[in-house]
Amino acid sequence: MNSFYKKYIQRTFFLAQKGAGKVSPNPLVGCVIVHNNKIIGESYHKKYGDKHAEINAINAIQNKSIIKNSSVFINLEPCSHYGKTPPCINALIKLKPKEVIISNKDPNPKVNGQGISMLKNSGLKVIVGILEKEGEKLNKRFFTFIRKKRPYIILKWAETKNGMIANERYESKWISNNLSRQLVHKWRAQEDAILVGASTVEHDNPQLTVRHWKGKNPIRVIIDPKGRVNLKSHIYNNLSNTIILTNINENKKKYLKKIKINSFEIKEINSFLVKENITSILIEGGAFTLGKFITSNQWDEIRIFQSNKTFKKGIKAPIINKLKLYYREILQDKLFIKYND
Image (cartoon, rainbow, N blue to C red; front, side, top):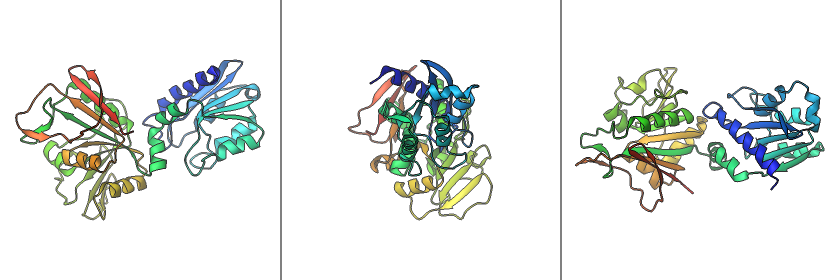
């Protein structure tokens, strides 16, 4: 593979990642324009509804005539349809760069190769598939949402050294340390939504917001079939939009939805989340809810903090037999991560 192509596609990955937590449900996209082995313009998709990466990169170049003799690198196929913004493909065809190099074809049915075909039909040289696996990993949330018709699902919990996620009084706070809690808040800022069951709200009264990291609060999704959650719970505040999945009728507060669904099976919940345009979700508990996602094989990552603390009695962590876990140290905690591959 041409190292020239790999070098600048890797640069698009770096740029695209800057949009994490800001562009959903759109994918992460970076664009680099190179003339005589020198970057003359580059940018990324910065915010949902704003200009796409290609347009931002083009606008960074004062003398646009030079683009005709330049190479355009994009990690994802340019859009060919009207959405919040006009299709990027039109601008590229108009400027006629000497070649367009793309990492991944866009699996969205509205695109799905049409952009590539339009570029080729206009006489442009197009190269597709450079660092393809790395590109899919970058946009794993978007690709999962489109291909599997469900959000990208991350399961997370903290457990004691002897495998407990709460003591016998259902208290689960402070098993992990300050650094790991800060990391969790960073994760929350990266995902569209966060989900817990009614028991977790009852016993922990969590806020489920981003307080120890800079970023947006995720949508809070609570599974509460019987309407058990106390109206004074933190999840009823207006710090973030909240969805209660229940048998109770819909609430009209602008930041709160009470949605009545027919089934509380995981696939039914996932179908609802797709309708809400939630492309990724962090599942934080409790043990019953986490276990339901594991047994139904509806997950993509498991992230576990293991503390050196122990509880004599308590609530056992979900069973994850036969899963190979990879770990790194977070000070005195171990962070185990498993990808469902």
